Length: 223
Image (cartoon, rainbow, N blue to C red; front, side):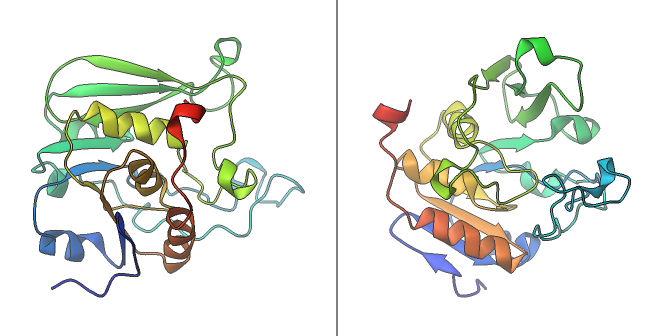
């Protein structure tokens, strides 16, 4: 059965626990939109690129572990949902059938080919097209409602997750089984959609609950 919700309001429900145990107990159909752990062994304290040192202004000591990130991601439990968007497609491309590809162009053109990736890819169930979302330049803060602080090492912009939800072309409630700091849930709430998030790390549940408790954005003004 389902545990008691960690957080619940009129549109968002958050569960603290293992999505592999909780998700099968949820009733109804969902649009699954998520940015799962990719099996990269992500270095959440930023020491990967600093020789193991915390350099002032760059190293992070306050991010919690990304659970499951030491093992290759297996998308198979999530493929049966009516609508699916999974970010990090290039890390598990061999494990999903043909479908639509979403591209997040996250660098300005003049920075293509410099440090780290120019784009990120998502697999979307069904279809066969490739669609791009370009990051705004100069970009707004990834978490402007928190004074520009980024609360999770792989946190996506709200605009990207709103676009991901809209691309599914369905009005089904949104499910994010790898919720992190709750960007997908916040995006769904701003779109007037019901959403459920599941997260194993309690600290991220607290952050997500705080973000989701805030007033809905006026997307007409923020578009």
